[in-house]
Image (tube, rainbow, N blue to C red):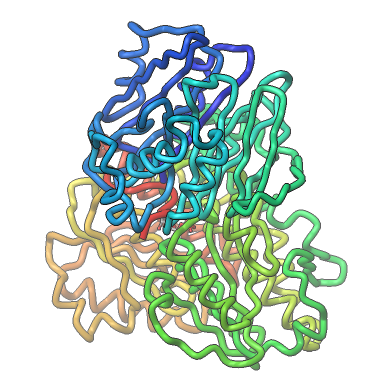
Length: 607
Ligand code: AGP
């Protein structure tokens, strides 16, 4: 996902733009650029391929005291990563930065014959389109932007400035977030509130279809149809410390280690240990509406999908009278799936901006199905479009690999399931074991991380040269194995895949040879003996087996990693911590970029 920043005020614009873009680096990008305006009608445009440090090299020779500017980090969608394709893009007196995709840019480009195109991007077409209304003073900047956006099909979050008036920035959004920071004699913009932290705590989240004209001491918002919108100023939740690495070498390790705290935030005010019940206000469903639910659809991508799959096993355990279907958003959005009456859809997304998940949300809403968000990013697009929702409140998850969000997403959905079971009159006491373990989880996560960290670090060195891995689990350990395999593959680039233990003999068993190591999640419980015989199948074929378990493990395997046994029902949540640490240490042992793995972005806002 690209990043946008902007500044107008009394301080040095270049300083804010660069520091703001650095806060947004975690989103993943392949080029960056800034433009600042002086009071003589001039502009200083600096762009560079690659990291922001390359841009800073250019800045060193182009320092300006300008008080207004915009900046951008680009993750290429149209046109390869290059300086020419980097934003901001210029057309006449205006400069524009853009997140999103202009789907009809080719048709628009055909009519913009006056403009000499210098890039392959859809964004430059948008800049030229705005200028076609702005040049020769036909429209003031805001109106020129509005006229252009009325012709656009696609998604955008944009910021536009003009050398003719170095006092104003025009911003607009449809499908790609933009937040306005209200400061003292300065106004800042960003595509993500973390860029504003430390500058202001007052934020205005723009909604789709809104355009704002900002100056250093004014914010004027209208719809594309020129209806005035009253600005709703909200408190920015994220504090500066929350986005620093907190003393860890990488965001990923910080986010793994802070799961006792982040899960405690998710549970805050939602668990009543006395009564053995949970309470979620956000979904906004009455007892009667909860009682009526017969079918749940859980929608997500990647880790969010795995969280939904794991939660679905639990929900089926304590609400046998409802069916639960977990779907991959990029698949489900194109299926013409029938959604039965009395269904509710859980839309799971850490960033709240994932294009495929958002598209599913919109499709499902068209069918009149109630949608509940299980989201982390406050004010994100998904969070604003669902009918109700539960924020998981894990704080900013900076590392591309999702860890603390997974743990909290699972538990938040389990709690949603418990509220359904409670409303349906579950026999007293049947839900208490789940509630009691949930209440204990933050402390047990801390204990588990403490007890396994060193051992996992040591073992990961032993396996660091393997190129292939098989993760295995049965029942609630199977979605957990899927999540563990994703963690390993997305940051260490090991070809790791997960299989249900019972599926081994239907094909994957043929893979076992010295190229592979196996990691099996074997919790105590009714299926423990079955898992033992599956492990034997693998060992008999010369497997190199790591077993993660919460009980004494009966067989001789290469390595056993034991987690505390007090947690029975949610043992997979603790086992997953081992997979998270294992992926982290394998990646650091290989010397790869832990927080920004190749080819990936933190939030996939393109399809
Ligand atoms: C998980 O580690 C990956 N970063 C990725 O699979 C991610 O979970 C997926 O893109 C969904 O993101 P979201 O939760 O922000 O919607």
